[in-house]
Image (cartoon, rainbow, N blue to C red; front, side, top):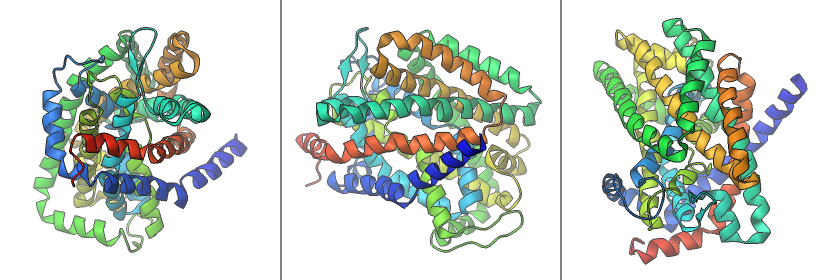
Length: 445
């Protein structure tokens, strides 16, 4: 087992090395320039389309609003609470700056993903709309590239059991045990039961649950974070100074903080940013392909909001709460660090984080179940969906009772392996993204 862990650790260092970071940020920056900074220029338009997208009679399975909520259900989760905290512990305050950079260019990546997903989607044997990187690789790049789409589906199906399943149930079990003394096995059993009940209804039930839970839990968390920041308003300028200064200069050890080099800030900022908002990963377009939407560009503008909400809003608030309360120099890490930050300012701050994390993780598990299911369907057909669901529910219970340092490592590695086929496809098909964008007079000329 130790040999396997060492091998995966080595592979992780390779796939999250400088070439991958350059590829993720470079692809996003290239797409942003190609579409003339449309995500920044048309942010308000995206929110208007999202509001109108609550109701749609166009072709598809779920409303454009619920498509984004399904995508957000998979992204707003442990990455926003535990992931941000881990990035700061390992990379220093400067890691938050690189998370922002990942998100700002990642909005263009997410836009392009959704445009291609809707443009190249298909209808399966059940009459459901299916799409995502495996489909726009096969249908957009040709039969010679079908192997690359299959590779994405394999990595996506496997990654889901880590990032979207066992990591989630394990984080919830830990925080509920610490905050409310709930036995881990009980947390796993309840989560597994709830997920199983929702999975019976397929994407429509998942979308309905996400459409109700995601806005409510996000507002609850944001209000809690803003309250903490209001109580520590005098520390906000110093927090921003820490972020911007140590994005480019090393930070020395202080208290329980071990110190961090600039490379660590970049690496963990980008890696945790991608873990949180999934821009470039290729997961979100699987949800957007099911939207009742005839216009790929309109769905692209809705999709880009996911990265903005996830990282620019939610992750930023978590990071600033951690920095302004000063707890980041202690010995806590992950979700417990975020809980300590909220708890230092609010009487029930730790419990608030515990509840939000539980809800975030539940919806993340639901969202990723849909992604994994569609990857398995692409590889093996509809007959593989039922066995996948059984394995998915079982993994939730397993994850809640194990120590998952190795699973975190594997999930992080598989994220990068998912991203590679998707980023290649985005670069190859980028001229089509530009043509579709320009056809709607959104080119910015």
